[in-house]
Length: 104
Image (cartoon, rainbow, N blue to C red; front, side, top):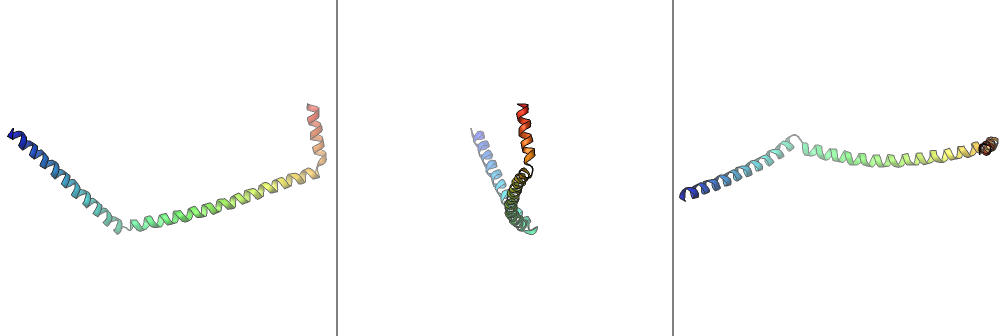
């Protein structure tokens, strides 16, 4: 039984040591990452890109609103032109009505 206890104790120490090493490596990685991000100004670059993205969203929304207004104006202009053409060419309307009646 002593051999099994010693093996169990050795295995327990190995697991604790491995966990300790992993914890130290994780802390080292996090510190090294912060140093690299600071050195290469990555945090500033990310903030600048996010700011640009927000401004582009605002510009896109404003452009979309303008495009909708233009689309509405074009639609209204087209309706007005159709009305004008209908007023100027009443004979064609009468002919198209007569053609429809004949085909029925």
